[in-house]
Image (cartoon, rainbow, N blue to C red; front, side):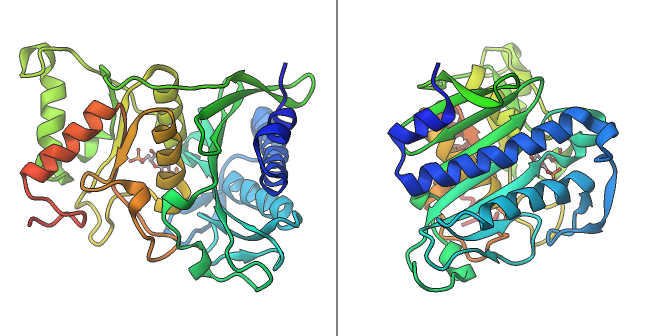
Length: 332
Ligand code: AFP
């Protein structure tokens, strides 16, 4: 039986191992609160909005504070950026790592007792000895040294990559430790399952409509094969399903809200999930280029996302190319 601490001691540098263990400690507190549910007084709204203009749930705020407090006490952490905070939070000038996180992904699921999770990304800090600033966080996803998620479902699990494949751990409530259950998670290049919020169909670009039309047509269309659709409204759960049994996940460019290039956040959701999916053998794109090659312009940037089974992801990108679509949704 390999525990998370054992694994990190042999697979990660001490600063990274320490930061990952700190994240795990915070996740265990969040998992405990979630398992108590309404009895812990965590349901309902917090009474505020985050920088994205989204109504914050009580647990969004609680999870954010737990992660922030534990991470800012870790001497290796130079700074933290959270989906729930307008600005970065400073930690230790001598730290060597920066952490970004979505403390509670899928927050609309909290009050209905469905799956939620915590997504994290760890970046190198290149100016150790100086006080970190937002610019230090604006690194491409390809610079991540680690990324992962804690999923609070029927059981609590952890999946992450340190850049050499994907590993998965399951939380053992008896010993209060994460235990390794899969040391080489891989996903298939092909699939018969997709995840998308199809109620946005009318706001999509032509190539995305064409792609979904093909899948919906199933064995009566050019694909000659039936597809199944699943949507949990928590990226973490949809990506976890893809890691477990394959699939393709999409939150594409849409024209629903002017000026918003898709719904998902590059640094808190898209980059960490792209790193995991690529390391498991899949692919990830904004439908035009590789997500992890995007240089962020600000920490709360949004991006269209298509990730999972390599063949499907490449096919979607090819359709966009055929239609001459650019990353900002305009035509060539
Ligand atoms: P919240 O964590 O703010 O609820 O958002 C979750 C999410 O960003 C992502 O995890 C889901 O895939 C997506 O939103 C769900 O969006 P819809 O509301 O369109 O279903």
